[in-house]
Image 1 (tube, rainbow over the protein chains, first blue to last red):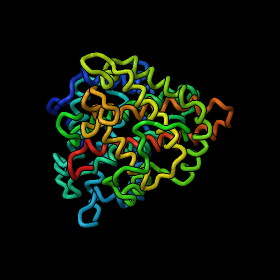
Image 2 (image 1 turned 180 degrees about the vertical axis):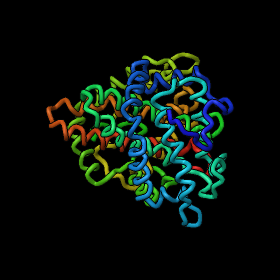
Image 3 (image 1 turned 30 degrees about the vertical axis):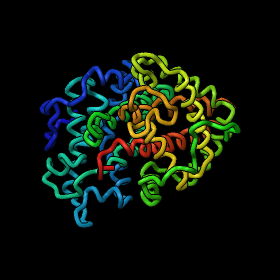
Image 4 (image 1 turned 90 degrees about the vertical axis):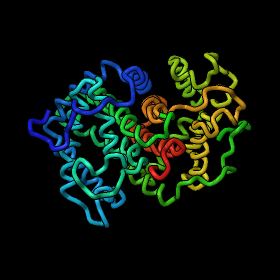
Amino acid sequence: MANTFIPGYTYGQVPEAPFSMHDFELLKQTVMFTEKDAEYLRKAGEILHDQVNEILDLWYGFVGQHPHLLAYFAKDGKVDSSYLQAVRKRFGQWIHDLCEKPFDQDWLNYQYEIGLRHHATKKNLTDHAQAAPLIHYRYMVAFIYPITATIRAFLARKGHPAELVEQMHQAWFKAVVLTVVLWTYPYVKQGEF
Amino acid sequence: MANTFIPGYTYGQVPEAPFSMHDFELLKQTVMFTEKDAEYLRKAGEILHDQVNEILDLWYGFVGQHPHLLAYFAKDGKVDSSYLQAVRKRFGQWIHDLCEKPFDQDWLNYQYEIGLRHHATKKNLTDHAQAAPLIHYRYMVAFIYPITATIRAFLARKGHPAELVEQMHQAWFKAVVLTVVLWTYPYVKQGEF
């Protein structure tokens, strides 16, 4: 957990997600997520804890190198750096939450809130920004790859056995897929989710 | 390439996808897909070629063990095994196509067609089945995990160097994410893709 106050971070204070714990259990089965994975995520959280800034540097560098991605933080071609920074703090907290928090109703609710903030429903609102009105769906799912592939080096950096690194990495991969499924709820047509 | 005729397999004979090659290039950049990955996929195709049936056995076994997944091949709780078998042939061909075909306009078009066949637009139609009217969106994205994780053992089985297996596996992972993004186009609200 971060110790500092993060503007716009409202974990535990958002409405209920339109997705039941029962459905979430079936979704977890589909990505082969077990209690063991929850344990590996806790371990990953310990390892990543003091590397979050470096991870965000890498991910933000990736976005910064791709004008088609940076555009989501821009208005009329001009990047809103205070918006970028505000989102960055919450993105860092998401790394902590993904590894450290139980996947309970609060977690589920907050994933939906994060989805709304990428979708036209609530994009820009939290940070009073005036950037692009939504993150296009395609990139929400596409990000599964870079967010998963790049974390491995950070998990491996502290000399843990290769097998444990692999197990933590697989747990992270599953958790990212779960997250992205939930984040994209607002984009999907009624009744088709 | 399979040598046998596959009912309902209409690669190269479908309408144009509502997604341009230009947008697809940006999507490839977002999953870090390069020309090297295309080469690794070709190599993966050679290795997987004679293992396709075994891969499908594993994937179908996974579906079969989960009633919430098997339901998509069922009507009134009764599984339609001829529908399952018809889909299986095309699923096998998809493995070949993913590894062996260039990601050109024909490939793009056919991914859209596959998406429509999972979506309510065309589900059941190709095989004159009467199963569930659509595959729910959530499982389309969730399947990125099992389809990616389980392929690794098949890539490693023929004694290739660990580094090459890893490179082929990463290329496969990227290609599966690309595929799933395109397959889910019909589920996404107008203008939000």
